[in-house]
Image (cartoon, rainbow, N blue to C red; front, top):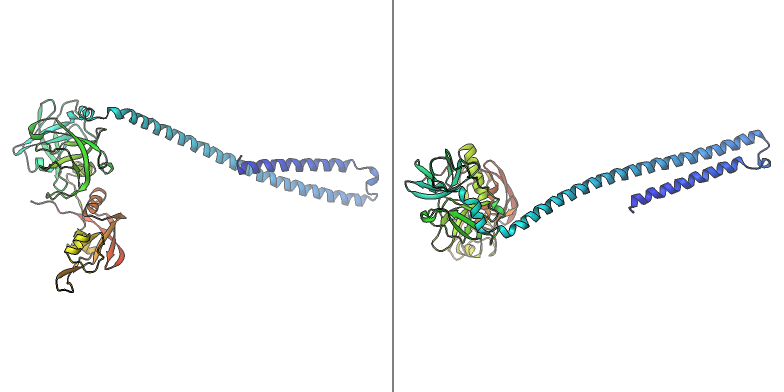
Length: 423
């Protein structure tokens, strides 16, 4: 029994006893022997008035207690009703979650690369241009196809081959060189083609099994299966600036632009680059979705831009650059250059300055080191790039936490957009 319920019961008992006592008092008063009654009528009247006043006071006190008791009971009943409704809602949500989890668990034995291929292969296409071929897949509608920028770059003669070997001409809706994403449109497609769904690539993990479908070396509809071997890699492959997923899946020429799928059949990336030593890459679906959605809606995608260059601090870079005024194990991104008339310059970011060490050798003196952006630590350039490309838009305010000449500081920067790519 709760404390409030116990209090209510106690008050009821006290009230009952008080009323019983009052009733007995009135009965005894009315049945007193006649000889005990005052002989003087005035004394009897005064005594009766005193007794009536006492009774009225007792009744007033009991009335107050009953009012308090009513309020307590109403409050408990109302609160109990609210609690019961919340409990029912929680039980309903829990039941739904258990049902969904049970369904997912039941599907686990069926989630194999073969099942993923069977559900997705019809959505994958071959893209041919006068300069070569690549892959793509339907996205958002049965007429729109996602692929790489480098597959259709500058091409006006684009042909798409579907899973059933039928073909159609395609036109470019828009593209973005920095993320290596392009959207093309076909007038018609087989009726059983379905767009693939993009997943949230920020939730993928190293070691997650994935499936790639593409057309390597012209071998259409080929399946590759492997694992995510790393996330947020930066490629030295201009003009690509976005962080990418690293894979242990072979991505041969002709596969670029194809979907990288998880075992639920959702796209976590678009394959775009391969090496001859086993490591290959894909543009994360979260970035692809941002770029493609903007291209479809506006015809272009604008990347956020701040306007500085930096290096990742570690003992090796501190030693090789001979940075004089930082500890040997200082971390963060050391600002090395600030582009004039950019958000970085307007916010007052300060680049490192050239100096001379006591032994006469060239050195640097650190001015600003970025430690975090909006509270997200920037231990590496990849940390900065992943946050900016996945979560920030042009004209958005971001807060930089800095090491500034040995002191902690914080500044707000209003981003702009990166200038269009020019070869």
